Each structure stands twice: as C-alpha cells, then as structure tokens.
Length: 341
Image 1: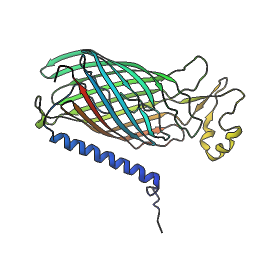
Image 2: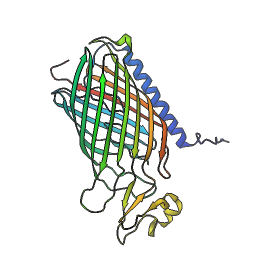
Image 3: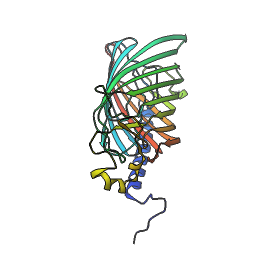
Image 4: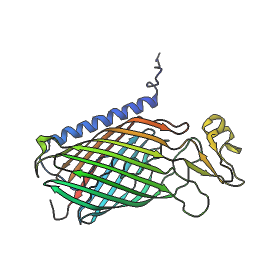
C-alpha cells in the first residue's frame, strides 16, 4: 500500500516539478561540459540568459534563436529573430507561447522575452560606446518596443483576461572585457487597451537585473579558440495588480452561474470592486520577487548555446498565488554574420 509524505513530493504534481527541475540542471551541466570540449568560434550579440545586456548585432548580421523556459505552473517556448540595422542598432521579434497551460505569475520571464504569450517587437540602440583599454568596452543600450498578447491565460480567481497591447522600455549599461563582463539594467512593461473605455488590464511589470560574467583563464584567448562565459545573474521584479472588466447587467465572477465555482474556489472572494469603477481589482495577481543563480553562454562557430537556473531569494506574491522556487531556461541560437567571421 503506497505511503504519502507530508511535504507532498509524492503527489503527481510534486514529482512532475521535481523531474523538470532535475532535467533542467542536467541539461545545463551537459551543455557546459560540451562547450569546454569544443575547439572554435564565437558570435556577436552575446548576452546573459535572464538579464539585461548592452550587446547588439552588427550591420547586416542576424540571429535566429529558440528558448525553452520553465517556471512554476507552465512551460513556454520562445522563438526570436534579431537583425542588425546599423552597427549599433538592431530590431528583434519574439513570440513566446505556452507548451503546457497553467496558472503562473505574469511578469516578464527574461529581459528580452515576455513572461506571457505575446508577439513583441523591440529596437535596441547602443547609444554609448567607449574603449578605455585594449579588449575593454564601456557601453549603454536603450530598448524600446511594443507587444500584443496572443493567448489567454487561465486564472483561478476570474475568467481569462482579454488580449491587449503593451509597451516596453529598458536601459542597460555595463563593462565588457576579455576576462569578465558586468551589466546592470532596468525595464518597465505597461499594458494598455485596444480601444478607449474600461477594459481588462494585465499586470504592469518593473524588472531589474545585475549580471556578472567570467571567462575562465584557460579560455582567455583570441579567435578561433572556445568562447565560454559563466554568469551569475540576479533579477528583481515588481508586478502590479491586474483588473477585470465588469460587464453591466452581465455575470460577474462569484455571481449567477459562477456561484458554485465561488464556493469551490475561495479565491473568487478576493475580487474587490473599487467604488465608482466598472472594473474589479484582482487581488491574486502581481507581487515582488528576487531570483539569483548561475548561467552560461557557449559559442561555437555560428552557433550559441545558453542555459541558466534562477533560485528564489525572495518571493512575495499578492493574495493566494503559488510561490515560485525555480526558473530555468535553455536556448540555442544561429548567427548569420554577413561577410565577417
């Protein structure tokens, strides 16, 4: 007769999360070992997995990227295309989508990738570039763009919110050297409305990051030697409250046909309609969190491999939301560097 542990790890959900976390760790370690063994190449536009960076592609260069992202409640796949318009100006298009549907916090997953299914276009302008020494650069890059949600997210405290557009702006600055990198950045994503009037509203997000990179001394050689960078990344986010439109004369959450669901799901009682407003504030949305952990970047010829794991240092979600313990990502990129190697 099977037994059950009190911590719940013997449940199907607990075993599923544990297996995914272990798999992500094994994949990242495998990529790290394989990168040490390769013997050539590096590509432009490299950056950490989760954090902001100043890296931009050169004029006429392009990259095609894919990323598999895992967080509490959902697995996402994120394709991304980047093109260098000018030496310090690039355009990118990303459109992550859910592989497995699940309820999860809605903040951005990474600096360059939304945390909910969206189609996003970003311009990256490296407006400051100085070389104080050989192989050393001080840089600053501004990012600006917009997006539109492409899938509706399931919620336990309300019907899914309507799709809506958003704008995103970010600033990154740092120092890039042969043996180390250091980048700091901050970005803000704000959701709007398709038309004037009261509408559903996703949670706005303020994201900050600090990434410190290190290139091992035995790899501190020029092209075509291996290019392996190890990073330690820390991200902090402040995710705002979402709101739901209340249809006049219609069924609102917790009333009418949804009354039975309100009994089964006490989360519905946390929807507090503010006075003189046609919307309801969703108290089970948003929060504050800090994550930190290792990542790596390995380039081989025109290919790049990235992987990273972030562990929760502080996670305070609003209302009754599941806490996040681990975030993981694994990415692959192919670079087209024009006439340059």
